[in-house]
Amino acid sequence: MFKRLGCYLKRLKSRRETQKSISPQEFQRLAHELMHLACVTERVMPENDMFTSRVQKIKEEMHKLNELAGKKEFARLPRETRLELVESLKQSRRQLMETMHLADPPTDTLQ
Image (cartoon, helix red, strand yellow):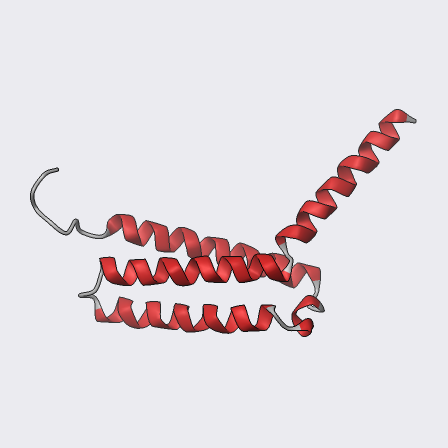
């Protein structure tokens, strides 16, 4: 009986964590973070025109996502769709971080 109760509580905890990770507030937080990373990345690599246009597009899409996440219709999206979107946002964040690490240092002098 205690095993069943323990399993039930684990499933309940997992379900709540999943619900929290796909909540509209979490999407707004991720969108804000990606917009900030895009701005920083744009400053780190200003000379690449193709990359700058891509960063502008990312910023526009994150602004739209931030607005959409605040609407009631967003909460009605299927759970699987929101999970896929969260994974996509996390992958975009990883790619932006990798791009920032590949940027040339601003000076040739060793620190």
